[in-house]
Length: 50
Image 1 (cartoon, one colour):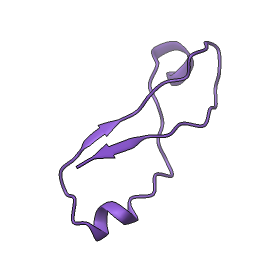
Image 2 (cartoon, helix red, strand yellow):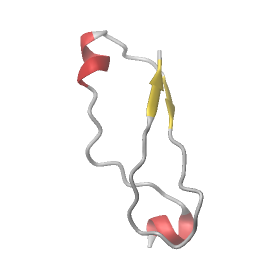
Image 3 (cartoon, rainbow, N blue to C red):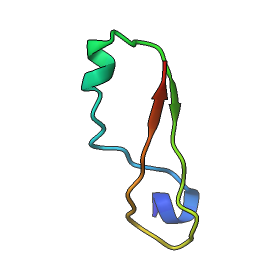
Image 4 (cartoon, rainbow, N blue to C red):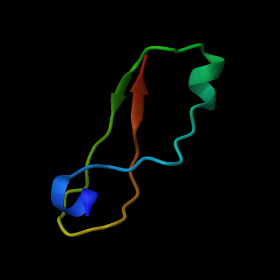
């Protein structure tokens, strides 16, 4: 319901190992959204810009 009605993404398994190794404690987190409606699950590619 959160994703389909309100557009809220639930991010459970984001790998941050490289950010920790680089000691990137502050960064811009960019998350694109799928270009279609009605989905309850989709693969996304978030980006962290240091």
